[in-house]
Length: 240
Image (cartoon, rainbow, N blue to C red; front, side, top):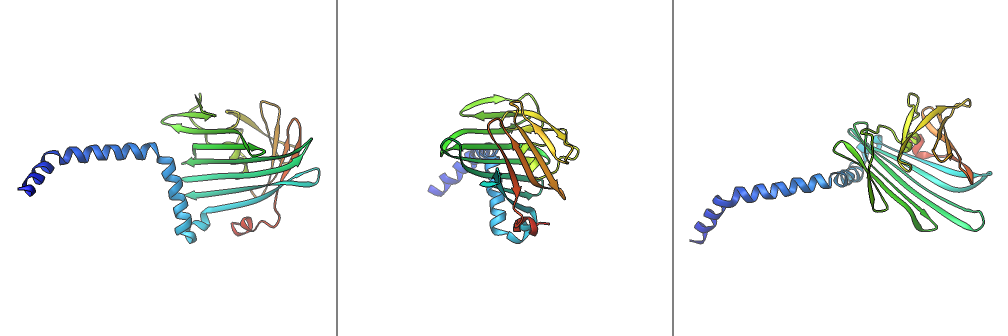
């Protein structure tokens, strides 16, 4: 009798329960798509190292001011199929009036050449100074900064400032600046570099050798510095 009741219940309500469960699963995957994508990329790197080694690039830099090394910067690019994840992590320790430590972490995910997600975290002496995320939702970008959300007026971003660390902008005239939420002009300089000037007057100038960024000159209102590729960069040598 119990078996008959169970069979009758499944026959009557089984399809409805299955459809509801399926709908919830689909909604869950849509809401967490980029998180699952990141997990898959890490999984590929951990369990298929021989395959991913040809798709992974790591570069190490030192940050120099007035001839003295004051920090470091690390870059990583992981590509799986049509998806590329760019990562930048840096730290500066110096002293102006008192000792300061500045930490920065940025990541950008591109799918088929289009930016779908980027994050920026900046810390000053251990405290979070700013935290920002840009996401592509349907056909528009949404920026979340310090808990507040804002829609952007443009629909497509194919290159941002982080991209310049990985690719020489030979044919690029504009790149998106995630921090200031605007496009900035890329101009060729007389000494072979690519100058990017921000609305606040700060300037970054990128230099390349064989398509790889080897130096970045940073000229800001209160300081200047250079980001220089480590000549003993084993990761760079192994990926050439």
